[in-house]
Image 1 (cartoon, helix red, strand yellow):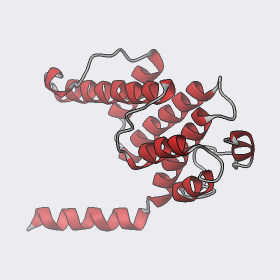
Image 2 (cartoon, one colour):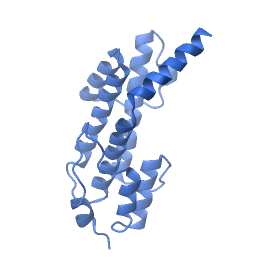
Image 3 (cartoon, one colour):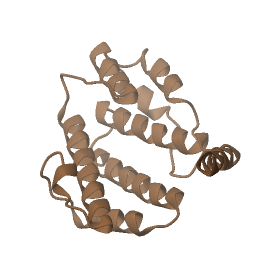
Image 4 (cartoon, helix red, strand yellow):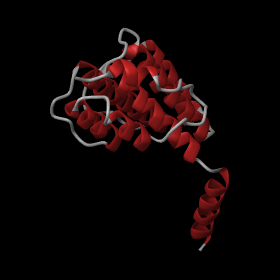
Length: 175
């Protein structure tokens, strides 16, 4: 029998912008002891980006939301460039006002890091929303894992490495 109650209650609180309290690999390793094998497989699929054929409602909701976000970003970027958006859209879906607003803000932003932060905050907010009616179950673990992946990504961004990559790119263009 799974023990989500114990597992979830021992997880440190996550806040956008904080350093991750553990790696996603540590999270998955720790979850192995407490959650069913099928749920562990689904968490690994979410963490590593491979398909889980037996998605639950929250996984499906997250995947559909991400597709709507990708479409919204593609449409906004195409509009900014004066191009037809149709070839860039994968499926119809309507963005809510919060998504439309965040996408417009991100596309207008000159600073790429701030634009990505806007989108990641939007993702964080949606994860809060879909997990709000759950407690001590797979859906909380999934939201936690995805948020952890977001924090890991931001923690891995290194200003010096970014400057170095930019300088290399400029040098390449000058040759």
